[in-house]
Length: 158
Image 1 (cartoon, rainbow, N blue to C red):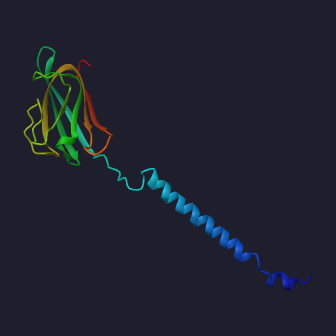
Image 2 (image 1 turned 90 degrees about the horizontal axis):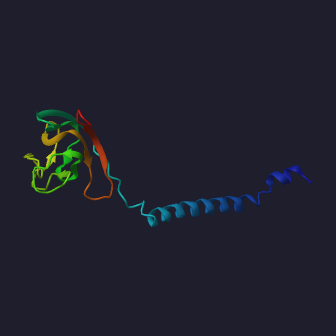
Image 3 (image 1 turned 120 degrees about the vertical axis):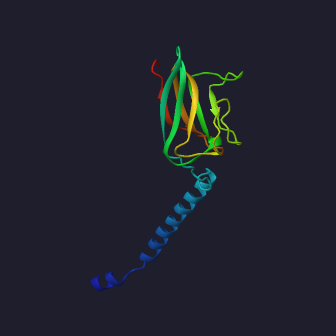
């Protein structure tokens, strides 16, 4: 056996490289197809807005008062995507809801908000509550089935 002949013999190199390339192409193609079949390829991720809210409770009677919710800064949020949820919210209408939404006209149902259709830094909302309230500011995008709690607060007797 001649050593020079071993170094020149490269018959098996080409088929091995071909097999490796075919496997790599197949794996990449399978991953792309799987992502579209599972709905991951064409679904855009919605980012939760980054906003800061503060709360200030003011007592105006026995076991009752109101809390002022202030958008302190961060992203502006579409009005129809912002909710106040919780317990201890005093019902100012005939409905028995403990969840408020700013409607598309820019007014906060049952709560007296008169701002525009977008909530931005500096805007406030007064909500009538009992002193043992527990409320959350919740973001729920119109398109989508997820929600995110942006801020929480509880009353002095909670």
